[in-house]
Image (cartoon, rainbow, N blue to C red; front, side, top):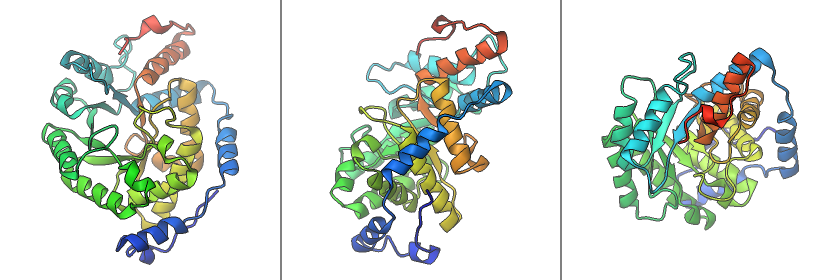
Amino acid sequence: MPTTAPTANALADVTASDSTLRRFLHGLPGVDAVGLEARAASLGTRSIKTTAKAYAIDLAISMVDLTTLEGADTPGKVRALGAKAVLPDPTDRTAPATAAVCVYPDMVAVAKQAVAGSGVKVASVATAFPAGRAALEVKLADVRDAVAAGADEVDMVIDRGAFLAGKYLKVYDEIVAVKEACGGDARLKVIFETGELSTYDNIRRASWLGMLAGADFIKTSTGKVAVNATPANTLLMLEAVRDFRAQTGVQVGVKPAGGIRTSKDAIKFLVLVNETVGEDWLDNHWFRFGASSLLNDLLMQRQKLATGRYSGPDYVTVD
């Protein structure tokens, strides 16, 4: 289901005013919900076996943003999570490290120390996560604190109330400001909270809005609402990044988050990536899973492939 976007020259002007941005976003083709869900379901039936399955499991492990975002988070818990991200399976050092550890801004320094010397990144949610209900200056201070503490990546939430009220330029300007606060090194992931956007058309509009504002990644969810990442909403966002690169030459990553708990689920999402945007996105620089429990199932399935035995949940640490 390809989407059609205006020419690159038109994209240069679409953020000039509220009216031009609204005209652009509402000019995007409407989403065929039935077709989208049918394609996502069809791709989810692909069977991945043996060597390909082992490769997919290792790839999925390398794409995990190992996450803890609880009010009860302690430095000890974050240090343990960092150690697990660097060495997910202490009994098998061939297991790849995860892509990142994702924590609240006040835990960034602890996480940074825990993964020091490894290739694991530290991501931090900011901008008054998860609701995003705060003044812009408060959100920017949150981001600057995280970056100053060593965050390699910032996961921001958009103002869903402003978006749903049609205040697209306000949302755009906020993303631009957060991107600037990230400085030159920290990558920005923009979270839409797709479960609150209500329609596929809104998810498509949010995807283009985020990319126009400079997002390095677009992300489905906070994991804090009832509906999070689904194959259909992730497929829609993958189509958006594919079409955005075709129009602008700029590649943007995708991060489904929340509700992805099993190896089978993760592999379905990797099939979506491969069939929609291709191998260019099959790398943790461009695709991530926002998850915590997913890693445990990936490790158990990995051991089963290696030994023929399923060890059960006691084989892995409880995060």
